[in-house]
Amino acid sequence: MPNNPDCTLTFWAASGVFGQRVATNLQTISRSRIISGMKRAVVIAVSLALTGCKSKPQVQPQKSPECLAAVKKEADDRAHHDLINQEIKGHIENDRLELKNLELEDQIARHEGRPVKNMVAIALLKNKIETDELSLEHDIDSSPSRDAVSQALINLACNPPAPK
Image (cartoon, rainbow, N blue to C red; front, top):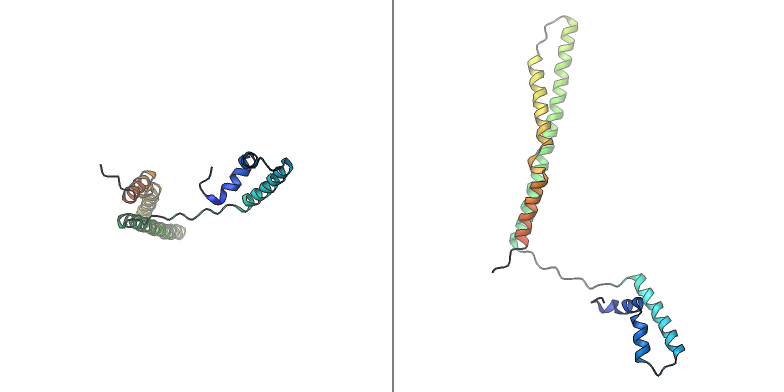
């Protein structure tokens, strides 16, 4: 049975308990009046159920300063991590553009019969791009284990163990 007194009538009518209690408590009233009263109760209960019983808002306990600090630190760390990842992605795009320019310069030099001079720079840029992409792909700070550890630290700060 629900704890909310506003929902008690709805629960009783839905489970049939209300009708049984009326019938046992009001034996002096005629059977037809009990049945009509039960019908009204069911109509009221259904309308209450359709509108929904408003439960009283539960008071949230104040979070400790340690808990708030842990949550803020995690949010700051996550924001810093995301900012660094965006910066790396920007560097990758710049390096790709520079790589394309160097390749075009070498291609133009080949067509004009000049010596190709950007092969080492192209190889270094390709290596740098691959390294940056691998660092984003295998990022330690976005692994599920890091998320689990940070969530455990927040839980520990917000719900300290009870003293023995």
